[in-house]
Length: 58
Image (cartoon, rainbow, N blue to C red; front, side, top):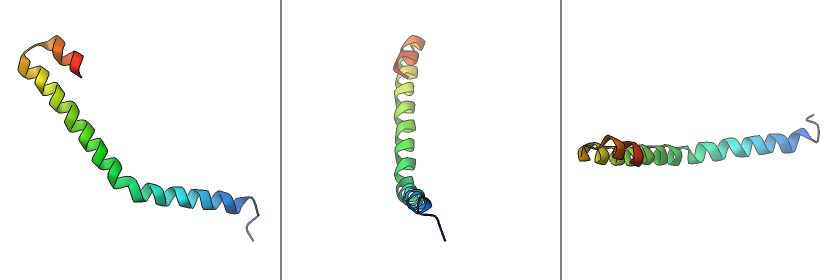
């Protein structure tokens, strides 16, 4: 039999695992969005031809 203090711990770990699995796709979407946004800002600085501006924007 599982001791009384391990049951709530197991429930917490199980819940956290399923929440992570449930929202993992949103983490991937947000990471992709952040990378594209950073690349866009960097390309604006490169297109302006100013190296200092590129470093400041990124």
